[in-house]
Length: 120
Length: 195
Image 1: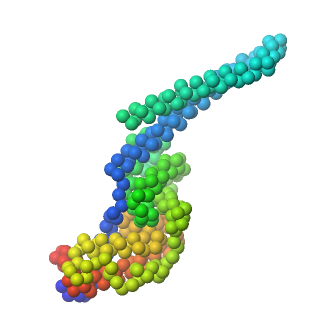
Image 2 (image 1 turned 135 degrees about the horizontal axis):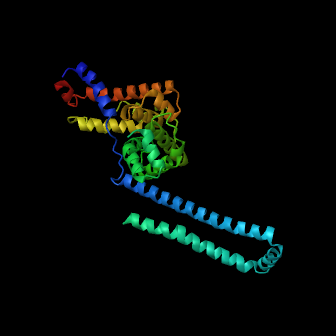
Image 3 (image 1 turned 60 degrees about the horizontal axis):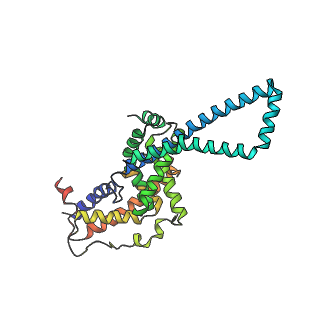
């Protein structure tokens, strides 16, 4: 083959070479792995959102009940405040335990069981 | 499926839609990440980071550009940040790469016949030795077929700079390929002559 012709072909070879796939690779299940991560993240945020809604509803009911007592039954309100102040540690402790149990039930257990199901 | 539909499906919490999005764009992401980072052992983690960012930022995707351009921007920025974090980011021009600028065709068997496969491998090595911006622009333009405007959007480089990087890189690579032509026993262009 004449050299001039070879030089012309060099341009074509370069164009082809630049379109050649590099040797880098990702595992075959890459998309599945990412989708699994996303699914776990979506599940976590969904369960957390639901927990916040439940918690918000319960807190709202308690606040409304306390407001009713405060405005319509001053004597009971004073008793309630006394009980609260004298048993603050117990009330806070029980409250935290209830919150933890509620969180475990509505978020953690659901999340881990969903995760186990995904990994099967 | 159109970009907007796919994005909406992902935002609605459809993980299969996201799997589809990843499958469709992983080739693009690995080209960019691979060519910038160049370390196979780091590529998978960075590609994962890219797609997690894509998922987190998808709400902000307005559809002003193609989804592939938007994902390429995230892949480019993530890879460059990774290089900066590991102090491997060089802004040097290719004049500062003596291995590339020398007339040697290192890695080629100059005594035997130069096969097309060997020459292609040599060309790949040359591309990997180019400075990061040159090889990125070459990859985006030739391999992923983005336009100048899209490359500008991805890399934030002015269009003139992109054109200049492309032409200088091509010129350098062509010179190197022509060195192979000078080898007496090369037969890498036989296919073209027959075609």
